[in-house]
Length: 246
Image (cartoon, rainbow, N blue to C red; front, side, top):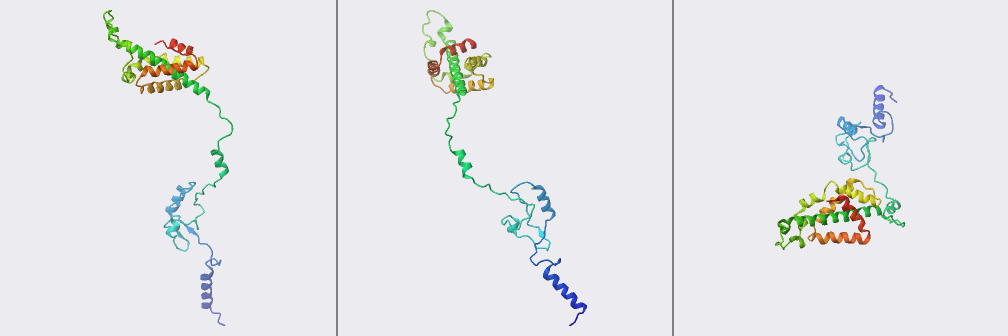
């Protein structure tokens, strides 16, 4: 048997090709070496679930490149350790259905909020009625002449349709005096409600703009005030009008 040096070198090279450079197993995993661009993307996306940087140009230690499918995230294996993937939440029907099932216990009625809106609406309707009648009297030609021979007074008849909308700016100037919101708050306090001034003013503005859409304004405000006084008390509206004093 020839134990020459050439034969020994050939044997070592053959062993190196079979077992690898470190003498390990033939199926030892390849070491992934990202390029500089991959490292920058990994640092940028660190801690961001579901974001995978473009690794189409990355290579392994033996020079082989990642396939396009793996680089675009179509396959999860093999994946670098520092790349994070979003895991969908597990559906729990018990937790989800608990939010969809109505509670058997009765829900408390928002008495304070309902009463607050009812009071403001009735007071706004009362103020609207007062300023509409004032405006009709100011526009009445018979009242302007003020002579016994003048028998036809427009203020004795209902206003024209859409009167509130046509004279909205002038009527708003009469309603929104500096006493208006304090009068509303004082009236609400009389019922035991302490509401922020901004909420009171916002609700009053909303009801005033709602009256702008009424064709027969006096019929509407009379309906609102009569309904409220029938269910509650007329003294509350009288208190508001005396405090507001347009």
